[in-house]
Image (cartoon, rainbow, N blue to C red; front, side):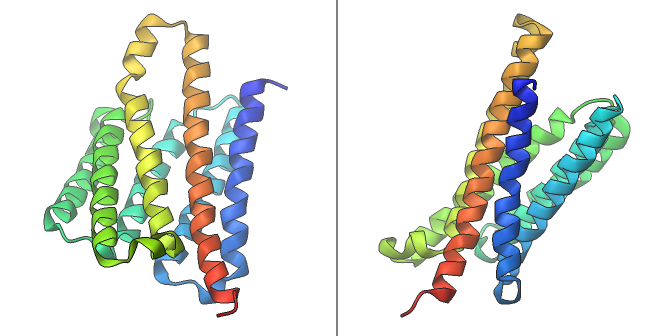
Length: 216
């Protein structure tokens, strides 16, 4: 089997773990954790549809662009209860409007919407940093690791920080590397970030499960 394809399969497998952990405690999940479960399920569906399209030699950009917008929107809402900067909300609505215009009129579905990716990455990094700042100021340091939202913010910060770096250097890689080398680097880096994000999402749900089941 192609190593890159195997690596992609492993990435898909990792999203099963937060889904399973969320389903186990579905009735006890708060709204933020339900959003984590929702984005995990949508991620799995997106990957499944993409693999079907690849199997029939069809492009997957339509699926990837739509999923990116949905994922950003869900994560933004999930961090909403700790957001103290109204400008971030305005930034989100402006980004969402731009993403729609960009998809239909500018970059379209012919490739990945990098403009949307740049702005979305900055939005999510700012939201996660703002969230962590408030969390650190409000919660005793020794209890931070027991909060599911703490791990969620790290999932967002690591994933979008890494993908923003990847998007920024994408054109450079295309110019200086062969198509095969570019594809290899892109897949390996993106899949690694995706696996890391899924691990943090699982940790967020696991921490919540432990808090509900561990004896006082």
